[in-house]
Length: 453
Image (tube, rainbow, N blue to C red; front, top):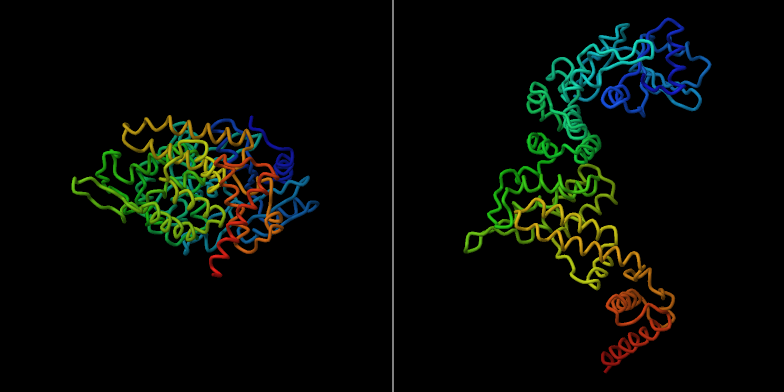
C-alpha cells in the first residue's frame, strides 16, 4: 500500500465522508508505481466543485489562489494541500495554459486531459491505483506515451515536448513512436514558451542518466530553443584527436560530465563556437583557434536569454572560457590555477578536461593519469591549508596601507606577495611578509625617483 501522510488521509477521508470522490494524482502516484518510492508532492483531485470543497473544509485555512482553474489549497496541520475539481480544459490559445476550464464529475474525463499516461494514474487507499489510460503498463515497459492524441497534447501545451525529453532522460524511458513523431512535428511551438520554463526543463533533462540518447534523437527539437547548437550538427573536425563531429563529441562530453547543472551546461556549450573558428592547415588538418573565447561569447548570450541567474551564468562561462586551458604539472602551477579560478572552479576544470577527453579519440586516454595527478595535488593543497589566495595571506590590506602604498598599489602588492608565497620564495609568516613588502616599497620608491629625474 502506498504511504500517504496523515494530513492527506484526512483530506481524502473528509471528502469521502461528504459523498465525493477523491484521489491522489501526479508524480507521487507515478513514483509509487515505478519504484515504490514515497512521494513529495501531494495533489488531490475530486468530484467536489470548488465551493463544495470549501464547505467540506470550512474549519481549515483555505487559500483560493487557483480558484479559476478549480484549485483550492487547504492547510491541514501546517501542510498545504492542493485540491482540484475534476475538469475538462478549453482551448489553449497560447499553447501553454487553457483559456478556460469546465468542471466535471467524471474522473475519466479529468484523466484524459493530462499529458502522459504515467502521470494520469489516480490513487486512494480504498480503491488502490486507478489506471484508465494504460499508465501502469507503460511504466512497466519504460515507455513514455501521451494520453490520447499526442498532436493535441503538444498543441495544447508545447512545454510538454521538453517535459517528454526530460522524463526520457531522467527516468530512462523510450518515447513511444507516435508521441516522438508529434514532438518533432510541433517543435516550433516551443518558441512561444517562456524562457524561464524552458531553462528549468532543459537543466533537469541535461542531468539525467539517459541524456545521450535524448541529445542524439531530439537535437532538432533542442535547436528550436537553442539555435546556437545547430552549427555543430554534423560538423566534421578533421583532426586526429577527434573521431566524431562536433555535435557527437559534445554529446559524449555531456554524458561523461558530472551530473549536476553547471557541469552539464558547461559540457553542452564548451565547443559551441568551434564551427565559427574552423580552419585547415596545409596538411588538411582541422583547427579551431580561439574557439574557447567564441564559445564563451555564444554561451553567455544563450544563458542570458534563458534567464539564468548571474552567479550560475558567470560560473558556466568561466568554465567554458577555460575548458582547454593546459593543466599545471606541479604544485606551484596548481596553486596558481586555484588562485586564478578559485578552488571549486579549478576542480571543475579538471573534471571538464576529463569529460572532454572521453569525447575524443581513444588515443587521448593517456591523459586520465594527468587528471588524477592534478586532482591529487589540489587535494593536498586543500588538506595542508596551503596559501593560494590573498585572503589566506598572513598580512592584509591594512598592513600594506601602513607601509604607505595606496590605490591599485595595494592590490598589486598583495598579489605579488601571494605569488612569492605560492612559488616558495617566502614563507607565509607575517614578519617575513612585512620584510617582503619593504622590498616592494623600495621598488616603488625607486620607480618614483626615476620618473622624477
